[in-house]
Length: 281
Image (cartoon, rainbow, N blue to C red):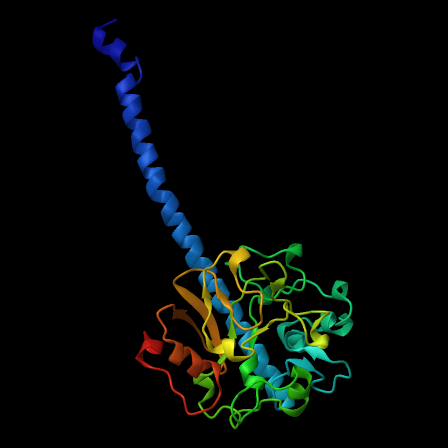
């Protein structure tokens, strides 16, 4: 057998093998970040889609009862005081769950996929009763100075926002939902069925914007253990932007560069405050 034929069957040399391994390693190094970016983009899209579905559900509830559900009270003929998101259950294809839930019994709840974001790294308890899209409590504040009422219960009994009169700044300029960690700090979070909520002392209700700190913006991509456990601030899942749903059910990502004045303008439904040019960036 000739030397050329012997070489053809000798396989790779050590140098050739190392070159092949190096090329494969480079390709993997290029592929992994690309796959990660695709996954993150898919998660953002899914989050915005779910936000939009919740916004549309709020509008369906409004169309039927001529008002948005309250933070916590009876609504649409119900005899039981329930949270905003619990009242939305029939409008997100969860009527059987709505029929059995009890605010005093967390085990009567369940997983509502449209209330969840795959961007949240913190969900616990298998997603049961978790809501990543809390509602802006500022909409339920007094129409005078938009300051907090003595209790949410008094507030909710007296004010159920209707459109368009309760939104002087316009529904497209008023924030309805934003993202929030499912669990936050040691005792905070966001639950659509919260047994403490009717005691008005909960730190886990699916709401935000309470008190003067509610106008200070959101926490951008903070670690779960370091995020605010109060009801005042929502959180973004990245340091770049937060996903929100406006009162007209439109959705968008809001950059961290948004000024406090523009955030306050979208948080409050009236007051003749307006967003700056940064809102459109």
